[in-house]
Each structure stands twice: as structure tokens, then as C-alpha cells.
Length: 89
Image (cartoon, rainbow, N blue to C red; front, top):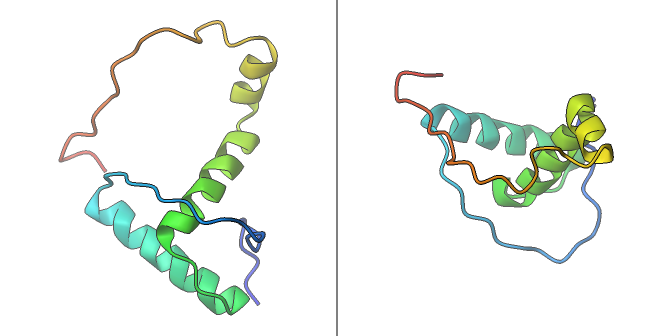
């Protein structure tokens, strides 16, 4: 059995999420969902996996955790979202 970084998802009420990702990231997410299905014997959609992947990413970011603990000095500032250029992978 594969040892995925993301553990088996807990029971939950499903929620809908809509995001735009690159074709490469979309394929990687589909591949991850397929490996998740092979590993746990349960099929989960990419939209169901993403919130848990993001939570794991945020929980593993020590700089973010420290900034949150210290009150996020930049919190509340209005920043325009960065767009990924077409030639940027």
C-alpha cells in the first residue's frame, strides 16, 4: 500500500469548490485522485481532496504558522492575486 502524505479523509458533509488551474496541475490532481482511490479503495473527487491538501500544506508551513501565531503583521492588507503566466510552470 502506498504511503501518501494525505491520509484517508474523514467522514464529512461534501462541499463544492470552483477554481481555475493549469492543465498540468489539473492532470496532477487527477493522477493524485486515482492513486488515492488505489490506496484506500474509495473514490474521492479532486474537489473533495483539495481542501484537505490545502489544509495539510498550510499546517506544514512553519513560516505561516509562526506568522499566524504572531498575529500576521500583513493581515488585512489588500493584495491583488498573482496570475501565473502561460509560459510559467
